[in-house]
Image (cartoon, rainbow, N blue to C red; front, side, top):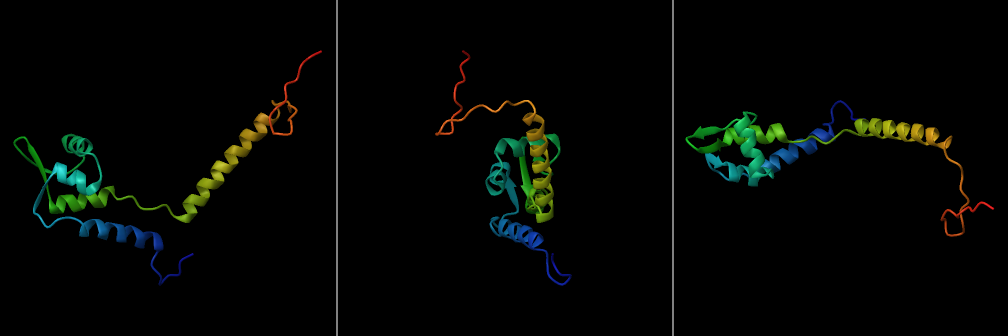
Length: 128
């Protein structure tokens, strides 16, 4: 648990990753979609498709699509994934473990224990 005066570590990691990404952006006023793809790590096709579908703000001049620095920063901020908090991970792990236990108990009634040899392999049972 984080005390009221202490910043949340997950939020700090998120903002630090954003700042590192912003620092890596070249000092230009406009970027081609190929440059945007290289900076963000997305494929050029997915960036182009996002622009074409209207999900990503951009400038369109004739056949050429570009992004201003402000649009690029907005795109990076919108696509940045914040790490899951520990409480979310714990809840997810508990849910998965409950599901596995339900499946184990459901299948336990159907299974007939087969004999196992020394190596851990199930032995063949032959009827006589």
